[in-house]
Image (cartoon, rainbow over all chains, first blue to last red; front, side, top):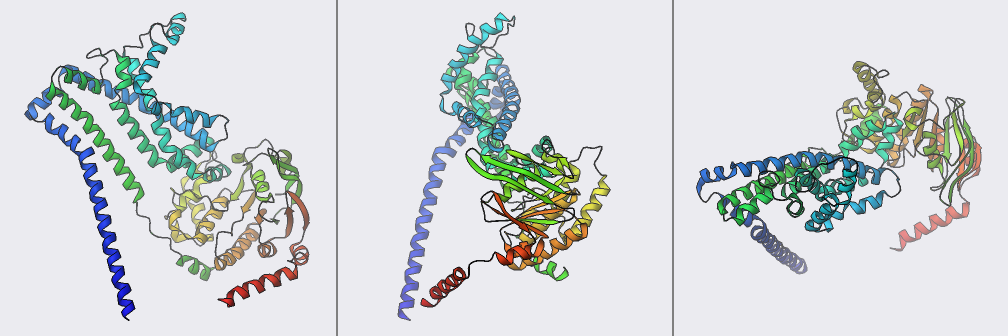
Length: 301
Length: 249
């Protein structure tokens, strides 16, 4: 009896110290996240609104800033669908077929994550710039379009930088799902396109949405590569992050904070959408398997 | 429908999985490919379905060579070991899938599809489960959905890859009988893959015994399988071992 009480006592102690440890760890994590992640975000909004809503709105709707917003949105609208299509093709090739070399393609896909954006910008200048290899080729074929220091450069740089995001998100889920459902669909008479649209795509919906959101967020925020190659032509080739830099360098602090707050808002919003999709798809009400029915079916059968 | 496998071989690189396998399945017959895991029986099934190309030989269905016919055009039903149900579709949509993906010219009307699905649900005793999703079903129910889905396309041939292996004993015995009666009622030609002797005995008209990618023997199950039981001393020793571990505790 005494031994039992002793054991129960020790267990309670252990539970107590376990709880203490858990609470302090959670507390530490909360403080870290708060100071390093949340505080800067809040400070931006605080600074942006420090001179009132009027000043805030004026700085956002200033002609150059408005142009930057439009260019950024245009870039996202072009880059994200293009990237998504390529990523789907790539992920499909890697996980569902045995196309040789597809794994190497995957390794190359990660390049933008490891190369510094500034270097990316330089590479693109070397390729597409006036003396660049591709530009000379195009010129030789009578095609003369300004790429570097123009809008195409902004799009190309963003495209390069955002390549891995969608592919990296959907690949694990694609590989996890295996090929059996696709094979079942094939034996049921589905064409390749129907299999993709009706079996594969729905099975990766969640990660696809997440990948698209991450790619969009990255496309909106890309600075380094775009900064190298866009030429900073005001009102023409400046995207939102560059606009922030320009305003800040010219001591337009409140305006810089305001523009930065738009970018931040976009980031927070995309995270919110991502969280919404994650929770709605994961916590969709799925009642537990009902095994009773096997019994009842047996009764009838 | 009669099915013939002519000298089927299959190798992955240096590894020979099937070596000159030939057999014939008569119309309305249920033939079992029986053998230990890794003997090539599942690969054989996948080759029949067109999910994998043979390295040599060919398959013919009713005399027609299937070599150049892709899986989607073979009209051969396939029940996978883990059923491979579409998780994002309801049971009814799973069963209807093979009909809804047909090109518009051949696709039955919506009402016809619904009627077919309702009838299959009824046959499989799943009428109350049409709106559910696969994750909400028990193993036995999933298996029945998989069979119903394969039957919906009115297959010329039904292939079953270890369809009972993921089920517990009571459900397995029940579904075995149910499958047999469905097969008889429909008169559908079937090839079943299993490693379970009892299953082969109870279900099949003829058994093909496979080992290491080759056919060892073909014949009626009760003729072959009664001869091929485990060596008696092996069984006794196993029982003895299990008893001794049980009582020494």
